[in-house]
Image (cartoon, rainbow, N blue to C red; front, side, top):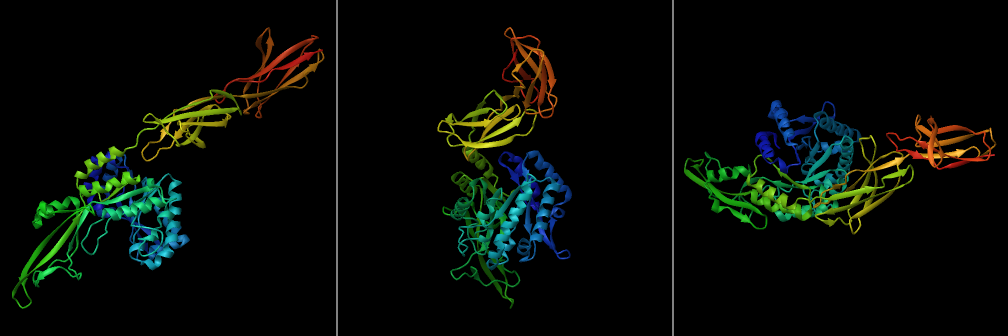
Length: 555
């Protein structure tokens, strides 16, 4: 979202908010502070106005779209590479970016660092490449620790051979893969100095193929151009295609121009190009047309003269966007990223929406059940079956979570894989406390993540019991000792005796911090047998627990 098209960019996002996951305002760049010998982050806010940024931020908040600003590199040639190679300068730059993200409440940052690739020269890449990965690693860890994301805009790479045919191998797609949340492939600017397609589809697909071979396709977004370029044509000898003799008082224009997709129609009208003259490249999947312009005037000697300059325009529009979006489904990509928003062919949105719906993931249903009541430390079985569109989810990754009663967070415990019938079973030693289980079946590109409803397991307090002696003389005393687990001070424990087939509570006490309780027993009757047990009352954390029965014989 360029700061110079803020209003039209916002309008596009608001109107199509259902299609966006994040937006990257082009608001920041990195420069070099010679006085301090360190980088500094410069804001473009002054160019757009502080109030405009505030309005944009407020508007984006209403769309629930994550704001992940882009930051570019405006340092002198070779400077960023030197920063990345220095442990201290790199750490300082990481801290600056993290501070920017956190202090503004952004969802993360998007790196658009291109100078070390396009300005430093490929002879520097071998040294820059590992330093770049160190920077990505350090920044990723710092951002992830704060629950922020990192995306990186990258030019093309085709392989890891590090040759002239490898593309911009300084970026090291595979090296970035463990750390970035997404890469945005800048599949445009294929033609720069001479007329040609902006980002031919076969070329873009070749980049995508390599990217998904070295990282999860779920991290890859395809960058799609929403602009066009206008060049002077070239002859077979690569000379400007110009006929006649150009005047000195009406100089011919040989510049290259860039237009947004939405500007192409009005430009064609200005230069007199009919829509019927526009060609479609079946290979590149882009439109193009040619036209010429006459410059009339005088020579340096004052004589009348004229020349004709022949020009060629290539541009992206809804048709080229439609062709490229199919790569998302073909390679299971995370989506597409547009450069830029606010000047696109508005026809692209309905097409994009229809395609998105056609490949949208289907729901995953998970039903789970667990052992309802167990003693602390006993075995609990938790099982779940997952289905999607009525069919078993086979080979799905299942993760078991536990939440103690009264807690607000879930603890991840184990992984397993669903069977041929969609079932998965976990056997776990019962936790110390009553609580809930849930099973999450990870989604795939075409199937959403499924989460079961919490299923409860009541964990009984475990009560161990022991008589200091199982035989006692009449009138003598013994101790009935017990230990309750999990140990908690102040838990009420009852001493019960079996009387005519019924358990009768005779006494109660409370546990020490180690869970220990003790009762004194004494009887004056000879030749009787008493059956005892201990009962730990239920709490907010555990259900009622019972000891085994012990027998005391009085002689």
